Image: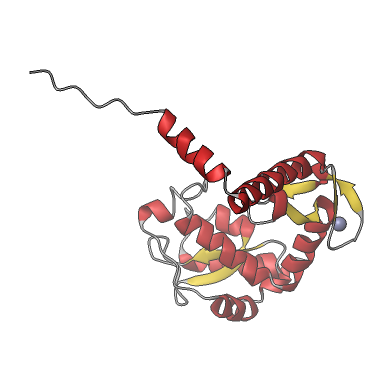
Amino acid sequence: MVNRKRLYNISEPIQIFLYFSNIKEFRAIFEFSLFLWYNSIMRRIKMEKKKCSRCKKFKPIENFNNCKNHSYGKSSYCRTCTKEYRIKFKEKYPWKFTYRYILTRCYNQRSDHYKQYGAKGIRNFLTIEDLKSLWFRDKAYLMKKPSIDRKDPKDNYTLDNCRYIEYSVNSSKSHLTYEERKQSSLNAIKKP
Ligand SMILES: [Zn+2]
C-alpha cells in the first residue's frame, strides 16, 4: 500500500485572506501596517545625513560608526566626537579601560588575546574599584604607558595577584623574576 501524503491546498490561505479582506477594520489595519513598513524602508534609504548628538552638526552617514543598539544601526556620536570622547574618558578613568580590557581578554571569544587568557581558564575577580585602588597604589599615573600585570602569570586576575607596571617591562618580562620586574618598573618611573 502506498502511503500518499496529503497535498497542501494552496488556495486555503488565499481564501482566508480574501475572507478577512472583506472586513473593513482588518483592511484598514493591513493597509496601515503596509504603509509603516514602506515608510521605514524609504526612510532608511533616504537617510544620508545624521545629526551628531554631541557636536549637534549634520554629517554624512559615513561619518558614524556602526552600532547595533542604536537607531538605523549607527551610533549617536560622529567619528571625531567618538574619538575625542574616548580620549577624554581614558584620561579621566584609565582603570575603567583596564577593566574592559581584562573582560575582553578573559570572556570575549572573538578577541585575539582570548587564546592566551580566557581559553587557558584565566578569570577576572577584580572590580572597577579594585583597579582604581591599584592605579593609585602603584602610581600608574606617573608611567608612560601603564599596563596591568599578574605577578603569577598562571593565576587569575585577583587583587593580590595584580599590579600596574610599565608596558615595555610587562611585554618583555617573561624571562625576568618578580623582583627584577619590580625594579625595572621602578627605574622606568624614575627616568623622566
Ligand atoms: Zn559630532
